[in-house]
Length: 172
Picture (tube, rainbow, N blue to C red):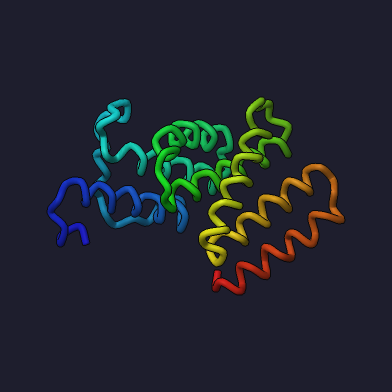
């Protein structure tokens, strides 16, 4: 694909995605592509790659367990994504919510974490109303994790089951 697409912006988007996939597969060890994305000045509001870079960095940090870095990139991402109704917006809110639950579980002091979880659940409710197949499983998982954190295991278990059932029904 990198040889096919000559656009610098498209090339950089593909490299950002490749970096995330490579990290998830083998922590970035076995990539055969030497090229790296050139994201430019991430403080420049006109930079079209900012959203993608911050979103992917948050996603990468979430999956490798770097909760503080995930929170940092999620918070950098939110003002950019906040006005857009697109998949990345909802996915970013979902991972930011899961990450905040993990921080609360580990007793990492984050005063905004509970508010982030509430906002993530509200966003998943909104998204599930429009796309049940893609977001109901995520909504139920956030709710289950929240109940588990509150030690309401009798409420958490049916929510975990509902999340699994919804994910299977949707082919995830």
